[in-house]
Image 1 (tube, rainbow, N blue to C red):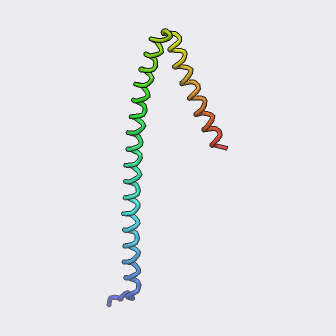
Image 2 (cartoon, rainbow, N blue to C red):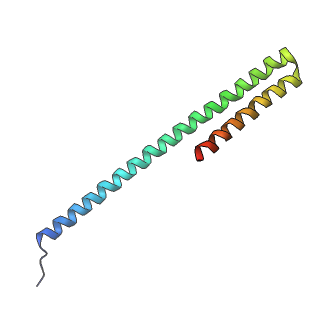
Length: 96
């Protein structure tokens, strides 16, 4: 003789499986969206870096024509030093 399970158990099992399947699909979609967002921001950061390089080269060239090579290099280097110090200060203040 085979024992029959109560109908409530199988329905509960089906509901739990459906819920687990739905949760797995939602998690996969969330992971996919997060990955696409990260890749998008990496492209944006890459374009910002390239534009910063071109702007730095153009600014250095303009300063070289106006002030000379040594002064232009000192000015561009100092601007990056100050920018780095400001970013470090902001990061430290946000951590507190």
